[in-house]
Amino acid sequence: MAFPERFSNLPDYAFPRLRKLLDTHAPGGEPIAMTIGEPRHPMPDFVGPTLAAHLDGFSVYPPNDGTPELLSAIAGWISRRYGAELSPDRIMALNGTREGLFNACIALCPETKRGKPPVVLMPNPFYQVYAVAALAVGAEPVYVPATAATGFLPDYAGLPAEILDRVTLAYLCSPANPQGAVASAEYWATLLALAEKHDFTVLADECYSEIWRTAPPPGALEVAKATGSDPERVFTFHSLSKRSNLPGMRSGFVAGGAGGMVRIRQLRAFAGAPLPLPIQRVSEIAWADEAHVTANRALYQDKFREADAIFSGLQGFSCPEGGFFLWLPVEDGEAAALKAWQETGVRVLPGAYLSRDVAGDNPGKGYIRVALVAPKEEMQRGLIRLRDCLYGRG
Ligand SMILES: Cc1ncc(COP(=O)(O)O)c(C=O)c1O
Image: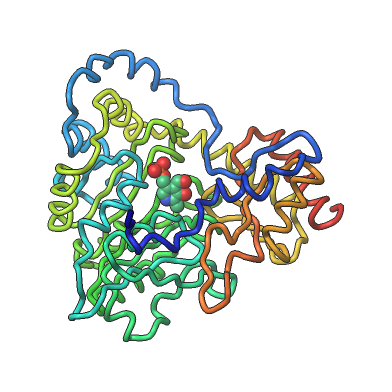
């Protein structure tokens, strides 16, 4: 039986790979999971009652694009957060951003660019769906290092013109998973100008946008508006998973230029899974409410302060500007993850499981990713054990 060749070199997904690494060894203490980016703060109070009030919505097929009420709630949020006014035809509800990040690539990536195979840019390390999406459309994924030397964001402008001229799409994650770097307004403006110059589209993964340390990260839509960029150059992806602690509800949206949105909507009308109606009702309320988001952010900000105190003085450590991961420098991420598990019971993810080898170099190899999602006391215990185990007592 033949299978597609284009997926044959994919590594195992990070979490089965981690289980293979750790699960044949006993934990050295009470297990503490700091691997997956699954929020564990409470979900908002209105979820249960709203779902209950709209249960009958499960008996009908939901509207593909999102109900008018949901699209209007999202447009209101975009306007308040980014000062950009988008008509509903420029927004579509998603079953979480992951499927949107995948489907948008299928909908927007042409088969060739200037007669050559297309290139899709992504940071390295990165959220893994970007690479699979590029491979699915037969594009060449180009993994661009996002390291301490580049401020943990990819330097797309530094690529050779020969590559840039083949680029159809560029993914950018801000705040970045895993490093927590935030793209400044200047960074976005430079990227949008590069997209204009080389005729490509930016897919902005901003699902951590509401979890920040000192100031709200500037958004792609906000910068596109301020710089007067062509609206077709940028599509942004947002989610309730992190903002509202609802990862299991699977609710997000994509917003961008009207022309590209027609393509995304068309593809999802045929092949997408629309968001169940009761979930659309809950989402509508979630996008309209900021109080729960502010309270959630305060919990993370408290955790950032705690992490700062625990790791202060550690060379190469900087607490994230946004998101909820620590990206801790170690000699070898796999060895460090195994040591932490065997000696302390803390589970963390080797950085290399989120990045690719390029020319023999893997920018994630010397890191572990630590999720700050557990309740504060548990997180504190985990971080102190990690510090003592991997870096010697503080
Ligand atoms: C960078 C990044 N993008 C997208 C997603 C997908 O989020 P969701 O599909 O839950 O909206 C995640 C989830 O962990 C993520 O870390």
